[in-house]
Image (tube, rainbow, N blue to C red; front, side):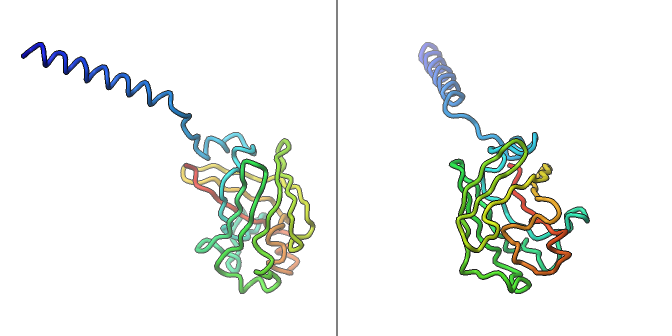
Length: 179
């Protein structure tokens, strides 16, 4: 009887060891967005769906402008590994943006990272100019990664306002989960 318990115990230990080894070799673990973005702008950092939280005043610590706060229905900017992007409009607060025609969206295009610059090319007549280059400011916290393009860098939401101060000081402010 003792022999049977020893055989069962040995079999259980062997099986658990085999399973543990199998788990460690199957597929790479996914790196968190916080880790991918911790060294600044890279292609790996950009890939994913970023929420357009709002238009912010880049000169006031990216404070979201109340009429352009999209946090309850953010726009979506999705970067794919194959160098494509898609931008979908926010679902709230577009009344403050009478110059935006929802029929012109979503916007599709190509992107690439060259050093610390994102080069974007839209395949839509709704976006002018069709090409832009931005040097984003990326901030990593424990729960999210934020990205803004700096003062006067409205591109996808350029027609959100024709107000000179918003166009001169505004930035599109994005976030993505740090996980």
